[in-house]
Length: 171
Image 1: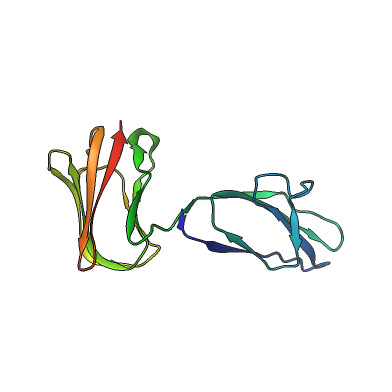
Image 2: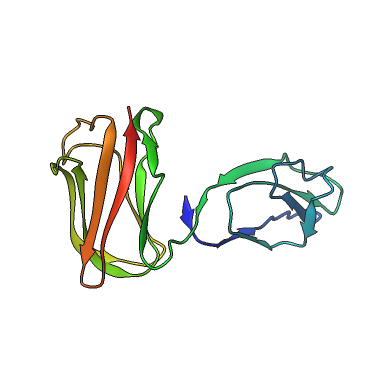
């Protein structure tokens, strides 16, 4: 998982005949036969700013092709002016954590409360770089027990930020 635009560098090496080209697609189609396939001489830089399935392979100058490789890239959009929670609707049974994503750099602490004001998680005040995130797996404080389903409030508080974000947890 990444925040904002990233660059993926595809490289290939062939010590016998040399690399001819690297082929790739970002729409999940076959880079060997798709009309959306692009080809480059190694190295190839691919800019990714939205969630994609990158499929790629290389071919050497003798005509030999490697098997198609595939990687999914999940890109979170940069929150405007501060902080956001992704996903805002979290299914704990799916095993994906919530991510508190920073759009700007902040010195901040994070507290997660039930709607009744009970503190379930606290991250002490520390510096968070822009485009970074903190993961919360739904566990209560530092135990192995997970919270129940319901609405929770994520409070991010620091010198330059004081934001409350609601999130729904399904269990």
